[in-house]
Length: 441
Image 1 (cartoon, helix red, strand yellow):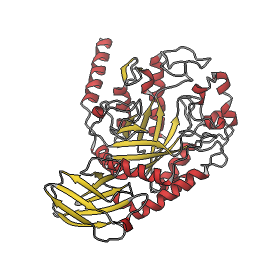
Image 2 (cartoon, helix red, strand yellow):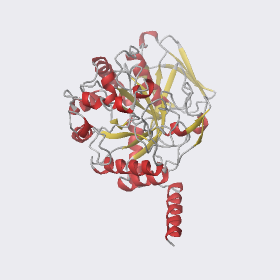
Image 3 (cartoon, one colour):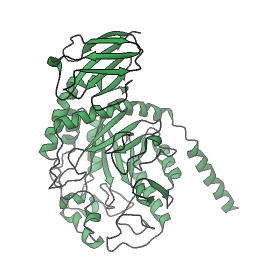
Image 4 (cartoon, one colour):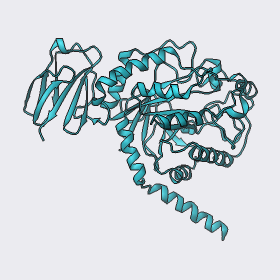
């Protein structure tokens, strides 16, 4: 009888997820998320001590015993969460997503489910997420928690996936125990830090077949139905996303793309254009070349590259989640701070053409991007060398077309369902020349 009841409960749970209907609070959060357009990603953990990125445990095949020494060196006495939040706000960012637990298995919060955490294993001994959550609430910035489904440290992450197999000291355990552990930690994150924006999952790809071009069959059961239901039950407004590079699973509330604009396919692991759903979208990208602090990373993106990435993301109908990797002392690199300040100055002048917009009527291309808000279309000209541009299949009646910054009129011809625009060289900006087109209502 008990076994029969258990089967019924599991079936009911699966049906609940398959027929997932987001709550009113969740739908409102999705709308807010789509309007927000710009967030700060923070990859921070004990791996920062080694200054070689967040994958250092895997890349250098550091054994469990060796890696367990790292927390003793992690003492971020310069950590100032309010400074981080104000930096993000000055940059024009509306939310922060921070790593609560990365693939190395170390928890950056006070977890009762695992003693392998920042409070119990580091000389710092404080819950950095608790402090950040308080600062976010104070300054009206939403907080999301990144959570790794992959773990190179715990024995119960077994069977193992495709990564971390050169790490010595990994034992064998029960997958069921790992699911219980994850649920316990997620419950902590959803009950001890106030209202959060959502959960940003990563690592499911570790357990998928991979042929070098596309992720295939999954080899374990992450119990997504149960896990997603747990999250939505505890905080209905919390948005769930997963960086699995595939079509969205039932229960997910936004779809993410890693270092790749939606459907552009510039990465081997890029989500197929056919797998893009109808959820809010988010692109995550690094400010230099690494997610976690990397002492030798010299691939710092220019002001132009970063601002144009934000514009491109909006033109593809997506948010941009721009990453910084704080140093082990708790400070963010000066280069990153300066870049964010420059973006903030641009956003202060031009944010109207980004925030609250949706993908415009023209397919994104290398020359120009369009965004739309109510009866306005914003044309972002990213190639300052062009003299004219054309939007095909344009059948709207134009009330006005001006340069957004100077307010001067733009020369154009609108006939035969095509819009041709002639650009004045004196109006062109090297980063972005914005045209404001108002449609007759």
